[in-house]
Length: 209
Ligand SMILES: C[S@@+](CC[C@H](N)C(=O)[O-])C[C@H]1O[C@@H](n2cnc3c(N)ncnc32)[C@H](O)[C@@H]1O
Image 1 (cartoon, rainbow, N blue to C red):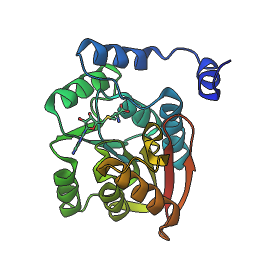
Image 2: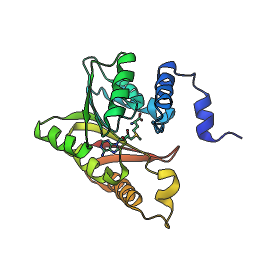
Image 3: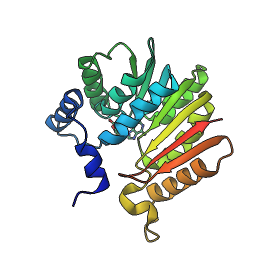
Image 4: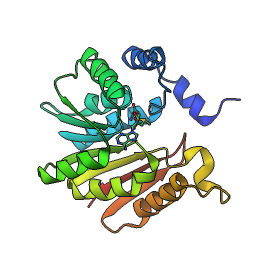
């Protein structure tokens, strides 16, 4: 029998543009940890329905989620994407250009924390945030997202279940502890209105009040 996740994925036609991104990641010998298609569609839907004009992504990899975010942005929209590795940023840039979004994306290469400090210094603000990089820094990224948020901004954080490790009391490594803290912040911080989607590897969603 299919899992609910498999069933929902089978309802959708192949997405040729996103398949090419996945192929390019495989061809580059990089481990493909792109957002799952169902949550990629959710990102597009949330960006579009919120009327977001500016999005900040933390963790670009090959540009899969970048394309999903860009698809939802309104006319004249901008995406800033923070990526540690130059080779990943180059691949993402190439895939975003091939998909027709080369002009709207600004890749900032290096540790995301450095880029966030710089974005704050520049006074940049965003309508939408997608947190999908090193798990140990999720709580710090969430604080920055709240700081850089325009009123009503949406924050999405991926992989909140860490393939079950978040739920396992025997697992207490730095990434797990940080993710538990992130999930609790999302659920309880009074500056946020939020929910937690437990399908796939977990996705947390919040709106900055
Ligand atoms: C899960 S992948 C991102 C997947 C991408 N969001 C997608 O769905 O297409 C995580 C990415 O974060 C990057 N990364 C890891 N640590 C980082 C850091 N400290 N600053 C910025 N990027 C980082 C990795 O190089 C990797 O490309």
